[in-house]
Amino acid sequence: MADNTDLYKYFEPTVQQNNLALSNIHTLTSWGIGTAAGVLGLTGWNGFIFFVASWVVLSTLVLFIKCQGKPSLYFKSSIIDVAGTPILNTMLSYVLVWTLMHALVYVYD
Image 1 (cartoon, rainbow, N blue to C red):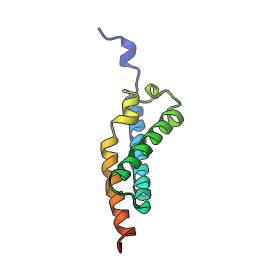
Image 2: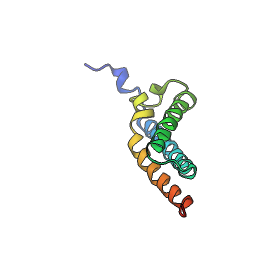
Image 3: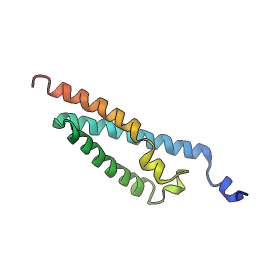
Image 4: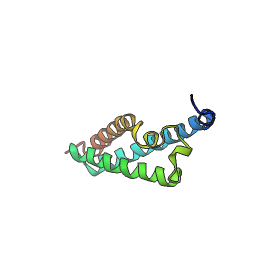
């Protein structure tokens, strides 16, 4: 039988607010990083390596600065919510902005 303390560990509106804030951080950062990759002229695997490196840095910053090293206090599945779950949506936004900025900057090349 489940322990009663686990049932009341998280207040759902607060967890939803934390997930929304994390989603906003990931989306806005992916736009900025996509813009940087496009302006720098990164193409192919270099652009994806840039994304992965920036994703690791961003997840580490969120983990240690925003969550103070304790993501289980703010999210239900802790590290998976911070680093793993939104990576596909963020990568799609990154690729969109990356290709747009690359096309705008290097239109005459």
